[in-house]
Picture 1 (cartoon, rainbow, N blue to C red):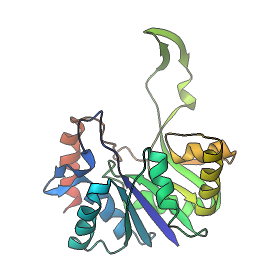
Picture 2: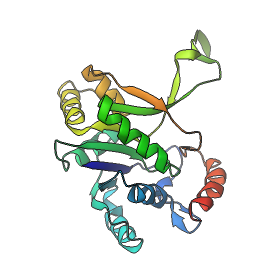
Picture 3: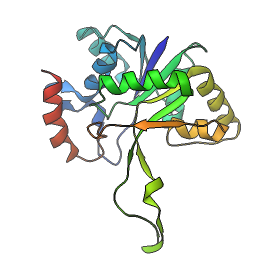
Picture 4: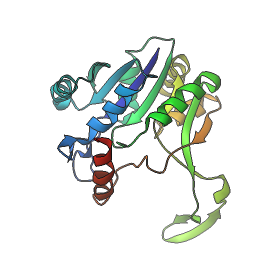
Length: 224
């Protein structure tokens, strides 16, 4: 089976609020991610990870909009990694999982399809986009060095994994007291190669309030 874990447990401290629940065209932002995975024929079950106080709200949302692939709505942990681990405990050892951030509302059906097809071959794969700007390492407002941009990429979600592999990687990371900012980093720490494939420029992550201007226009098209 193919599962999706959608993460919506962040408190958005840098953003200044719970951006995953902002109303965009009369629907909460997280709706757009859930509905896309719910529509995908490559997804069997969805687990939503959120704040304790938002569990009932998301259950209501899933019921209202007939997001019937939603298997469970659970509370997240202290860090992103802990939230993913809470959801992994609900999954069987066999099958595959896509892990997605709710603040990327424009994930496409084609990207979901591509990821699930590739993960069966590679066990771990993530969507990336090349960096075209010059990138410099800076410390205390001084340039340390210029990085070779031809080998640098932006990483997106969803990230796709063989469930058994990801569970093994998480167990290893916790044993070594290692925390990473994404799930691919957990698998990399285990020593397992992570395959990359081309992401999508429209798969935008909301980080600043100005991003909402673009998102609102694009999400309007999603409703049509």
